[in-house]
Length: 264
Image 1 (cartoon, rainbow, N blue to C red):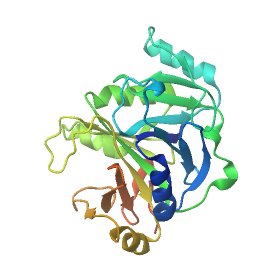
Image 2 (image 1 turned 90 degrees about the horizontal axis):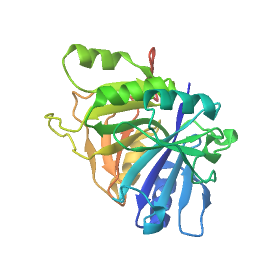
Image 3 (image 1 turned 135 degrees about the vertical axis):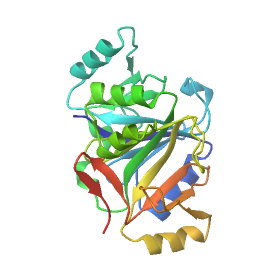
């Protein structure tokens, strides 16, 4: 099964974002490009801030959370499953450096997915306990189709909270790879507090020092409590360019069929 290990952003000022994540979320730098792109890590994920510029050639050039990437054991079987699902699907080569995967495909909603067999350049020795990413959330037009895509092509597993939403007649779907919870919410969602941002809506960090992290963050930005009825995370804040980030210690996320991970 594949593992979620990469999140790409389009940024105005990658340097300032990288410094923000280092200072408040304990990340370390992996490398930077001559064009101003910077990759950082929480010890497992590669977070890459691409300096927004026409030369990137992306279909969507809006600032913010842009696309995800997964590590796989080998590429050919992934290509085969993707083409079986979408015979006219396009497989693109990426530059296979610290900021990119080896190939790229697109999901059913035309959002990019980078794929690597090399962990996106994150050394295994860097993996640490906290803070760490354990959640990625999408807003999609067809969450069910997106779930089927990630299950069929990458082997992600649908988790119990997703089956519950289906039984309730709700459109939210959830799957996981054993480390990260991938939430796929309906773009058109009547729930109070829903943010209608297409594609990646937010990512979530698990921390074992909530009070210390909150104290530091609240000195420079606003932190909002999540509704008590929500099963995941306790707080949400935004980085310097408005990207939404969830923070949890006691609620955590459902990261596998039989595994709910918290920091307590």
